[in-house]
Length: 162
Image (tube, rainbow, N blue to C red; front, side, top):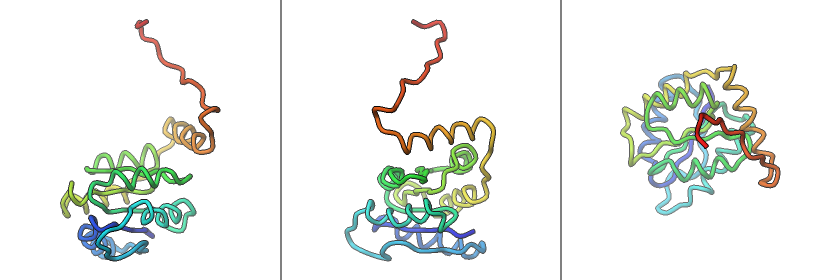
């Protein structure tokens, strides 16, 4: 699988470890962003990776930073990107199967190297499921091209509560 990777200053060590693991597992790794900088801005670094994911230049992306939160928020501003902060294998697998997560963000200050490798393995081996999950992914894609004025109030399920 062709995997795009990038990191800010807070994720460089975890990125290096996971890149070795990816290559040893037979994946092609495409690096985006600077290798090392003392102070950098993750929105600018995640953008080229997110664009590559959205265009289909890479099959999936992984971004490394301190927590994973900021880059996930930034990457999700790019149409076609479904980024998620993941801290365990189940969420990585479920994110792909149900939501078709295509850009994973991992926090070096949150998880260790062994867990990161296990999460990445779950992320890369998971397969997108159809059925009700496809309907929900279609609804998510519709949100990408809508404006706030176009949003309709969701139909709420009423379960005897007024």
